[in-house]
Image (cartoon, rainbow, N blue to C red; front, side, top):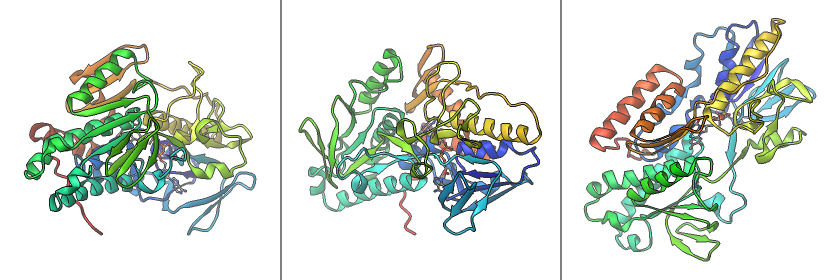
Length: 410
Ligand SMILES: Cc1cc2nc3c(=O)[nH]c(=O)nc-3n(C[C@H](O)[C@H](O)[C@H](O)COP(=O)(O)OP(=O)(O)OC[C@H]3O[C@@H](n4cnc5c(N)ncnc54)[C@H](O)[C@@H]3O)c2cc1C
């Protein structure tokens, strides 16, 4: 029994198999589980890396039927039921769980692959933070760079990743920059959020959209809707409207696609290169293979809509696949997957968040912030991680400090 990927989906599946007789092998290219929803807090110096990267082996110390390997999956042969790796010998399987997640989609925008900063992995978050901090240092040494837009940041994408990053970036500038660099005027820095659609947060109700724009603008973020990033150079961003933004940092939060490996499986893929699955989360042509989390297009049994790429969907679908396989091995009847929606939410900044519940009820501001914190703490893999996050959040809330704003060369 093989689980590929140690994100929410893979970990959920592996944990769902805990009580089964199966011998489970979980492989991930990293030796840690990444908590993606808080990556922007690493990128803006609020959280340290271990708060969002938890050792995978640590999560399974109590699970006797599971072994973890760190390696890169290089090929999957569904017909031969065999997986190849960069280093390990190929492994055969009776059941396979595909939880390889998604990866950034630059939609072919010129210069994006070379100059944009995506925010999908822990190395992405560290790279963005190091870049921003080193840009500050460089501007401090050469003040003329400020005129050239060195301090300016453009964030692309008006979904949760873009909005959360723009809000956090603004708070990073507002909270520490002017104290750290008294000779550089904070007012010289601009943060611009660019969204191609007519409004940010299309998945939320109008009152949330309006609140979010106001909360971002209050923090100094300029929200530009209805314009598309056409090309990205190291210090300039060109928009389709012809406008040119002077910025040495461009964060890409605009699009995802299924892990590139899925394109080699010989399957017909859904929108965003996601694998279409049946109501049990199996690939219909290969019922011994389950696709879960971001890599899968899972249709909600209640709404008949494809579920969004969210941590809670990944965790619940992974757990379901694990338990279903355990049930199949034990000869039990299996049930279709049912998603329990805990609401869609995003944090804009300190004391400012938005939540939309399944029935349409909305929350904004501090109450929503508390709900956001509670849901995200629950998704963190261990109590130790929760305690770490609470201490860092409380510290930042009280002192406005960002103690992780250091660059460490290795
Ligand atoms: C910036 C950001 C903010 C987000 N905020 C929220 C939020 O607030 N709330 C929410 O619910 N969701 C949020 N999400 C979405 C959520 O994080 C994802 O839906 C979730 O992580 C998907 O889990 P997964 O296990 O399917 O994939 P992943 O978490 O991506 O895990 C896939 C795993 O596969 C491994 N892998 C990939 N390729 C290979 C390979 N070739 N070989 C070996 N291993 C491989 C990776 O290392 C990774 O560990 C956010 C996502 C991002 C990027």
